[in-house]
Image 1 (cartoon, one colour):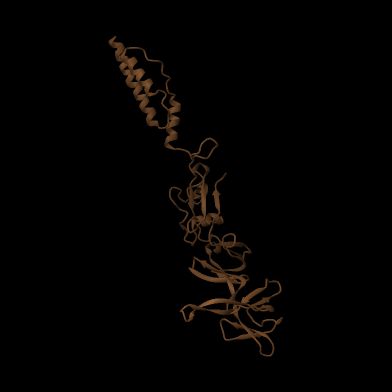
Image 2 (cartoon, rainbow, N blue to C red):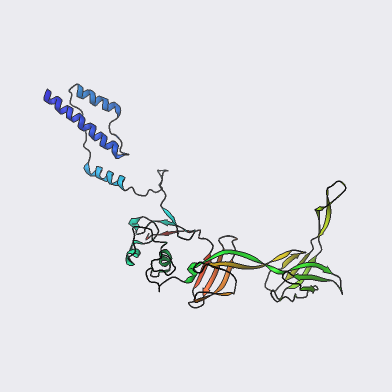
Length: 341
């Protein structure tokens, strides 16, 4: 009987050890409830043979431990509401965001392919996307996007990779409609904003301005508005109502939308200018459609300028030497997934 007690005593400790391992594994459901545990203890104390216990598969335990040490990325499915989003990174010197695949898919957390890094003997155990190992002014990530050699200073992306849109704004006409003159018939007074030159143009005549040639006076609307003038008070100290001339003069040019000038106010031209920044020289300059500018040893022409009506501000340019076209943006908003999938 003492021998049986010893066996049962050691068996009880062994069972408790197995239960402790299962609890430490995390997430493994106990096969025995607290009530069942009490029954087993009672059986042991009463020297009864406990019920058979199914042994844990060692391979299943090894698989569980491996999963806990390196948990996979979770995804959404139809039966679970809990998920872990895939990692994303913000690109160096940019607002662009990349959804990065896992190491098993061949990419680092910076979105660079492991094979590409090994090809150029670049480290993959620390961040390198924002570095410039060949000191040519372009980062490793920019060289990767341009398919150039990141460790050869003679191989680098087009200079436009360092050109960004700071601002796109609509140009104003360089003159203002001043009013109607009745000298030798009705004519319309238009004054240059940057000089003392004033034009007197009759209906259907073309405005002789060198900066915006070809605009013709096509319509005129006499209009007045009542406005409170805080500079003039009545007997009770209240602002007086003044009659303000807000007459409109309409100019038109073949191939363009007619432009309305309100008396005393500048009008928008419908033409846009872009303010660009070239970071390699820390230089900011303005350019319009058709303008040609130079970046170091390359010349570029502005093809298109798009304001931010329905998307980011964009400027399309062409390298006159290589004939390559590039679209410059003020920010990158789209998500790009860099993976082999």
